[in-house]
Amino acid sequence: MVYTTTYSSPMGMIVLESDGEVLTGLRFVDDPKAPQQAIETISTETTDTLPIFEKVRQWLDDYFAGKRPLNVPRLNPPGCHRVVGVNGSLGGYAYGLNRKKQLLELEK
View 1: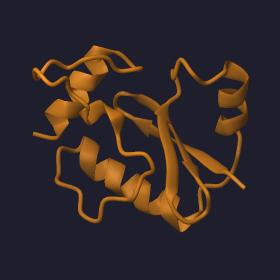
View 2: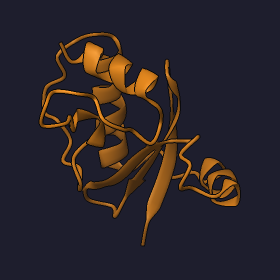
View 3: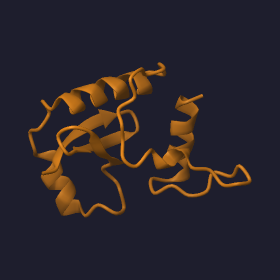
């Protein structure tokens, strides 16, 4: 079973997905790969009480506040915004290079 919830970030709404134990997905609502109908369904689910979602929310609060979050939640696969080209170029990002730059800046 896949559990979902949402998180309101300074960069937009984020959908969190879990198998009940670990985080299996994290994407912005404007994900070009996610059909609008699925996003509408996800945003109405009430699975906020899973321990992994509570942990991820706290981590995201710290992350967006510019703090170094501790106890990084395990995510399969890892965040793709960290992938850069062999020559150091940013390359692509499904949510746009501007958002990629903002996320990388938070991690400095």
